[in-house]
Image (cartoon, rainbow, N blue to C red; front, side):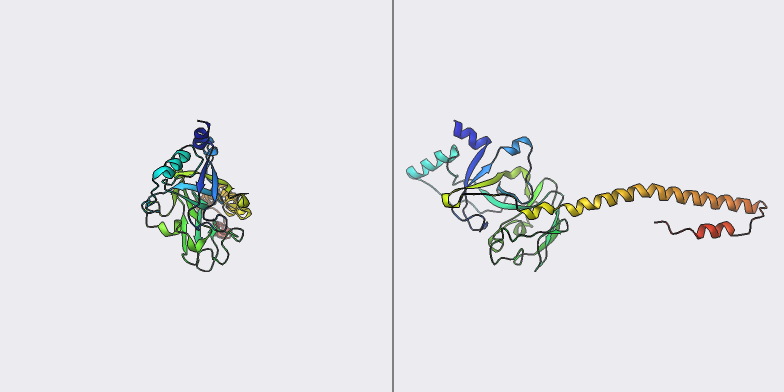
Length: 263
């Protein structure tokens, strides 16, 4: 009962079935996935390695069939979370962009998120390019969805390859099982799975644009008010001139024209 509760609410073991996340994860690795923090409102973040249910069409029909005593044992242990399930249709990828982000990768270039180029040398499979096999974007990720990619970029059917499906290649946050936090097996590969440092600067460009936008919003009313005053002055001067004012014709108009252009 305790193991079942742990699997349901805390952590669950998953087996890595392919090479799409090399060298971070190797085929046959067992990872532990944090299922607790989402219960407290935690949402997937850029750079995290997450396990998620097949959004539909990413995986083919399951062909694994376990029978006999071995199959029964695996089913029992996977039910309580001590072994990965052989039937669940789940995938594991790295979150590159989250809802509201703009992501792209042009041929020969780096992955760019919100105008910031990612340094993926920390985890990209040796010899791979960021997107040489499948350039994409720019794409704006819908709110509540994720753009995910494998670390072995040239051996990963990730978001890039499913843009023709519902969601445009993105994954719903509701499909995320949890974040992979540690490689638990084999013991000689035990290690944590932290967020790479390069993701710390993502979003800075968008944040930097905010003060400018606020300044523009604050300046607009002042510009409009000044223009209104200038128009009132011009209208007033025109009325004085037509009623016999001694002012020189056009003098007030010259003053208005001499004001700097209003942006």
